[in-house]
Image (cartoon, rainbow, N blue to C red; front, side):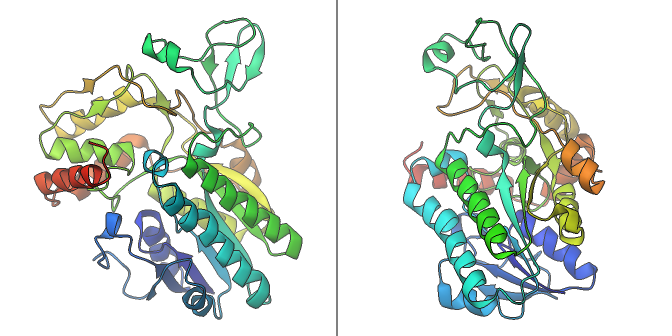
Length: 370
């Protein structure tokens, strides 16, 4: 098939490109080479057998050309970073929401006859807090935590009805969404628009809600990348990994290779059409334990800097219930967390340590964050 991967030069997109080409597909990459991620250069890992077009998703003319003759679209292009989205609102919304609008406009009005499927990268950030259970009141979705509680170090949500502490549980796709950032709102927009247009015009579409993706090729110099890569960057520069709150907040970390296999699964199976699926490991680990595990694997002498500070909009717990994609398609993650971290650490060994850390600090200072 002829396949277009928007954001195909990026972390997830590039691995997807590699797999699609290995399967015998003809792949076209459309990517703007975002300077914060790529410093404006084509990455050396980019598959030489793919056609590459440098362009922005808001460039209607170039994107129109990129869609010519395409059978399947994987829409991975997006500005990524919850914190950054809160002060670069227009940039994020223009790239994520409006860029998706341009793509869908072109698909509907010019390329509808030859598009066989469109898969969009959604996000666990749309949930806000994950699903919890109260021993008295049952399952519920708590509101965003109050700053007055976090100032006192009361990190965990409690039941709004009986004030009992809540216990986190796996978050299924039916959990109400609670977007706490511009990035989350943008990803919900991408998901909603894609499903709406797909259903309206009978174009098979699928939305995959990625949880915390990690692996090689993740930018170590971008301070808004995943926490595993951020920890790696600091360790390589002999700086302690910084952990907010008490370090017991938990997330679901999934290997980029499992993300790719989920994308391939929904492309190949029509049972996935017009549906939303969580893509995660289905288990959780605290951020503090993640940091300790990375330190152990690297053999570093650094320690965690648990600062007992909070960040506005941060959630406490969220990890995936992956039973829907498993039951529907038979998909299961294959990469264990420790194995995936070892791969990330091995890949990072030839990356310049102090340069990466300094580059991330420059980005933050330029944006007035530090």
